[in-house]
Amino acid sequence: MLYMLTAVEQTAGETIATIHAIKNALMDAKHRIRSQYKFYSQDLINNLFTHPYTKIEFIERDLKVSRLTATKYLEALTAGGFLRKQKIGRSNYYVNIALNAILTR
Image (cartoon, rainbow, N blue to C red):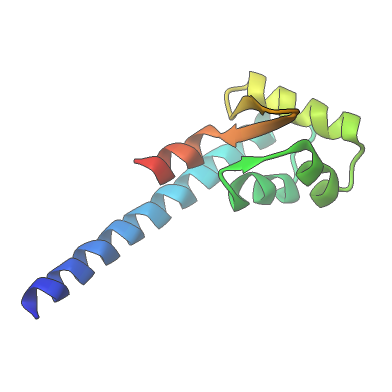
């Protein structure tokens, strides 16, 4: 019984640390994107931190912008070091570097 309680305690502690790390990464990205890019919006930040990756189609849908505009935003964030572009098949995926690092550690 003590073993199980210790395991639950450790798992809870690790989960809380992960949540704090995600929150800190989100706030850091929010402030940096807001200061560096004119296209900052809370919807963009929400999209980037909902999943460890995004796609052009997701930005189009969530921000209600054209495909060209969504591509421009994602390419700018890739050049700025926020995202890593990964081509799989015919699709481009944009991996959130900070969030992916937190989730895979």
